Length: 229
Image (cartoon, rainbow, N blue to C red; front, side):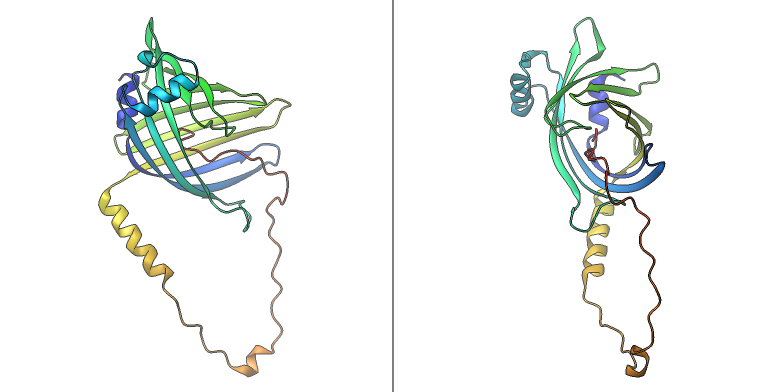
C-alpha cells in the first residue's frame, strides 16, 4: 500500500470511539465522534492553496483530504459544548522514498494551528505521523484491520513532562446506518410527558446526590481531531 491508497481507503464516514489516558491525573476519559473524510486529488485547489501557505511547491503534492468531525469527551463541562471542526491535509512524499515525507495540515492535532509533520509507512503499512509543535510533540499511528475498521494510537508530550496517550477504534458508517441513526435521534428528541407525582410524595426528603469525581480543572486542551482526524 502506498500513501495515496492509504488516504483513499480512509475516505468516507466513520464513527470513532476514543479512550484517552491523562497520565498526570492517572485518570482516563472516553469519547466518541462522527468523522467525514473526502479524498482530494493532487490538483485540487485546496491542496494547492495549503501547499502555498506552507511555502511548498504544489507540484510536489500527490493528494490530500478534507476532514470534518463532531464529538464529545466525558470530562466536558456543560458550558464547553462539543468538539467539532474541519481541516485540510496535503501529502508531500520525499522524492527518494515515497513511503515517507511531509504531511501539511491546516489544523494540527495537539495544537489548533497550521503545522507540517512527518509521515512514514512502516513494514505492515501502518501510517506513522510525527509532529513537533511549539510547546509539545505528538506521535500517531493508524492502521487498517479491514476496510471497515481502522485503529489509531497517539501520544502527546508537552515540554515539561505532561503526557497523554489515546486509543481509537474507527468504524466506517454506511449510508443506511447514517439514515437509521438520524431517525433514531429524531425519535429521542421528541417531547416526553412528565410522569404524574402524588403531591403527598413530593414533600418526602430527597436522596443526597454525590458530587462528580471528575477533575474540575487543569484538563488539557487537546483537539479531538480525527487524523487527529
